[in-house]
Length: 362
Length: 166
Image (tube, rainbow over all chains, first blue to last red; front, side, top):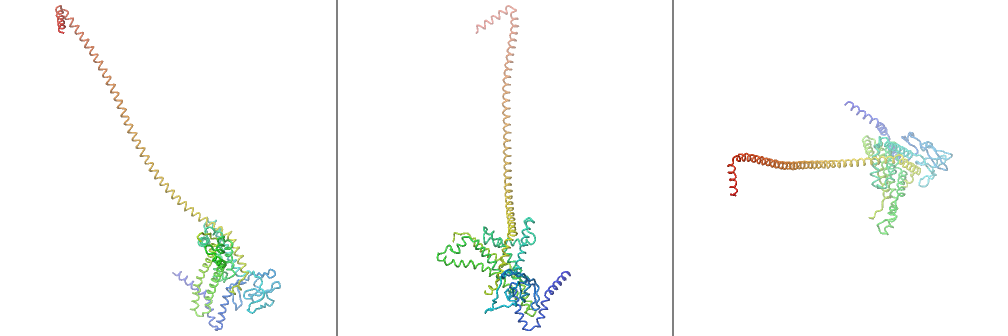
């Protein structure tokens, strides 16, 4: 009995300890003026915007006012009449101009522009910078995250593959959790959509994309603050691969359905062909937008609600925000898995269309 | 949309494709291939084990049926054998009886024949004895009679008389 009470007390203390910074922050804020509140709102909005974007730093925490940043600068790789490789620490978080081999580069809205020594940015009428943009192959935060996820996946699934031989065909450790998921992708996604005959050649892609998206989505839920699957370039790349695989593994029947739809009048076939061709591109396009929009929206809403905690100055509002953020986090965990499932599922569906055999009932 | 296109980072796209394709190829060789093979092998193994268990059950059933059939057959055979033995026994007894009868008949017949011949011999013997006795008696009587002359005459006369009468 006394053990239980002690445990309970310890838990309460732990919660108070974790929440303590929020309380002190709130007390401090109450003394601020209405103008301060406005700027705070703006600050939160900027913070969310900033979070959604890619970055040349892997920042764990930062304090804009104090100008302190805790994180790792990442390598910047530019192609500007030759390969330029330097550390992003040269930008000093966008405050200074980086000088490499006599060229000057400046960060503006999280993009690298070529500038003069002072870092002057010239604008056109629409307030867009007119400075030259060098080809940017930097290892950004998102690239680092993808690499981390790749290593994690390789380590996990290599261990699973090896554990079979060691343990007489039965997985050990984490593999026990992941093996049913692998089987799920095979039996619930690949086989029903592609068919028993052709599914094998797509398995590697489907399994990799499922776990890749899922792990990246989950990493987006961590305080690391990464947002890889909510980046249009990443979802475009993934959708492009699905599109390329669909197009290059399609059989005659698939192309027949696009350009010369069987079973409809000749005139209709001519009308249908452009629609079907458009459909070829719309399918992967919807994949790209769906994943991007879902993850971005999830991050925006969740971060806004977390931000609300700092705007509400009373403990009721902040507590409610906290509860809402907590509930939404759980929902986002579901969404993380769901979006990975949907992307994989629809990819499999498109592969299935590309491999559909000819039916006489058309 | 414009903002979206503007924020599109070619570098990130490039790395994404490179990392992802590399990951697919690596995992295919070192993870998915072996994993799917192991899972498949295990499933096949389970299927085979179930099949063989089913087969064993069927075989067992067949064996049981066979056993029963064999038992029935054995029982029928035993019955048949016992019946045959009984028949053989009966036949043997009957044969023996018959043979004994025949033997007995033969013995009786030969006994009767020998009795008959013995009887005949005895009769003959008795006849001879009677003839001898009668001749002896007759001799003694004749001697007596012939010892006196008148008596001899009387006898002749008596005999003659008998002849006449005849």
